[in-house]
View (cartoon, helix red, strand yellow):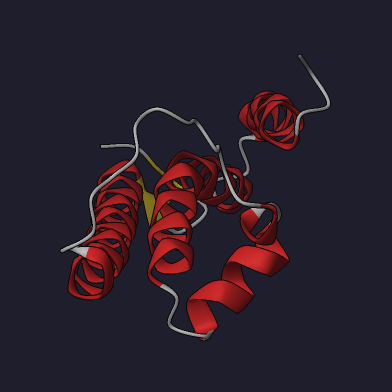
Length: 128
C-alpha cells in the first residue's frame, strides 16, 4: 500500500471500482427502461428487416439524444444508456488524472492526460 499526498492506492482502487460499478448499473437501468418502454409501445409490430434505416437523424448527437430521453422516447433512453456505458472508461481515466494529481505523481498525470486526449479524440471522431 503506497500513500502519497493523503490518498492510498487501495482507496483510489475502491473509488474507481465504485465509480465503474455505479456507471455500469446506471447505464443498464437506462437501457432496460428504454427497452421496456419500446416493447410496450411497439411490441406487437412486425419488424421489417428488409430495409436498414440506421440511426434516425433525431438521435445523432448528444444534445438530441438527451432531448429524446427527456421526452421519454424509448430509443432516446436506450441511446443515453449506451452513451453512459461508453463514458465509463472515460470517467475512469478522468478520475485517474485527479488521483495522480492528489498523489503528486506528475509523470503519471501526463501519461494519463495523453491517454485521455487520445480517448476523447477517437470518441469524437477526430482520429479515424
